[in-house]
Length: 492
Ligand SMILES: Cc1cc2nc3c(=O)[nH]c(=O)nc-3n(C[C@H](O)[C@H](O)[C@H](O)COP(=O)(O)OP(=O)(O)OC[C@H]3O[C@@H](n4cnc5c(N)ncnc54)[C@H](O)[C@@H]3O)c2cc1C
Image (tube, rainbow, N blue to C red; front, side, top):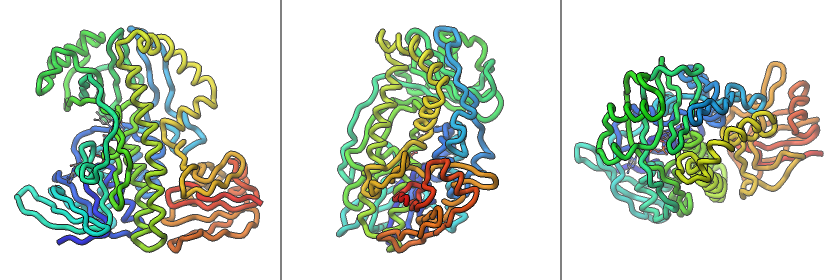
């Protein structure tokens, strides 16, 4: 019998990040997955700035940055002509230490998190499928089955469903997965191609009725290609490479460019969100809670963000640092963002794939012009970066935010990133508890209802000047949560 305060079901990126967070805060838990190890497939490629900021807190960002590359730009080819070029290399300069879109395969992200868990004395129980679940007082009990037919019972206080789109835990918790499924069948293929593209650039090719998206991959002439499967292939069980090659070459003008492939898969695009991310002491995170089109490269990043948000709260409750009320804020903070994401990615994807004349007109004529305009204006460019990079996410309406504000900075906002000669603001936020920053000689405020770690920092000199230039008080105090969001801001 396994007895654990927290059982995580699923060790994809979301479950691995949650386990890593619980290790970071020293909270006992067990993580299981029916697979025999981390994924070997490339799957998600885009890693957003907010994820890199969270990797930085874990101390794994340098390892991540050593294995992938920055996407330099995105080019739009519409009806055979280059209509827009979006430089991405430093699009968020001054807003994040990682002002770009980073390309690193999901398998490598999973490996980084798995290494962190191992380095902290933990492990994933692989080949362990949760097949049975029951309520057990305020907790849960159930059965784990192994590939050899053996099984083991478990009991836990908190049950976390990180099992992906068809989550067993979500079904058990009877949380409806609201939304729908797009009609078209899509393909994803990792191809070797000779394209005259700028190094490390993204490419969107739009024809009258079709589209292809190209993402550069590590290695020479390797691209992830996503598109709609043509009717001739749609019903075949496996995608015949030669037919797919012919489709891409003939319909999009890439004759003779494809030289090989390493992976193809098909999928339907869903847009669904769970009616609640929590039912009593059961929680959902990642694809178990929300799924949407891959437009914008958000899925894995959002699951990682869910895990960071839930991780410190669960650890604080299990470690006795705070009351269980903090857990209410998980659904309050993450579900509104998930809902908005499902809605916007669905609309963006609809715009790209729809055959109706309206969306076709918009993507052919309006979109390239709109992009050119956005890029000319610094404020719009920054907003675009903040939205896609997920650095814009704030938790202002949450019960963990007290409504305090100073000028443009509110309780619930991500703590801003800024630099000064010899330092930067994120160096203050590397610890595993709350951080109380005191400016201009103001006294430190107490973190109410919290007996866990607290670091007090008296900010002076160049760092205080930089903080005030970034909109923080000259004299006052800011309390920052373990996940780098502001819980209280006070100015004298
Ligand atoms: C083609 C494609 C491209 C994508 N590109 C991007 C991108 O560029 N950027 C991005 O952010 N996202 C992208 N995504 C989405 C991303 O891959 C997913 O959002 C991400 O994998 C979700 O992670 P997860 O951990 O929540 O779920 P999953 O990765 O699905 O992991 C769930 C895990 O739970 C395990 N499990 C399930 N049930 C049980 C059970 N009963 N017992 C034990 N274990 C169980 C499974 O074995 C699995 O390992 C893409 C997806 C696709 C298909």
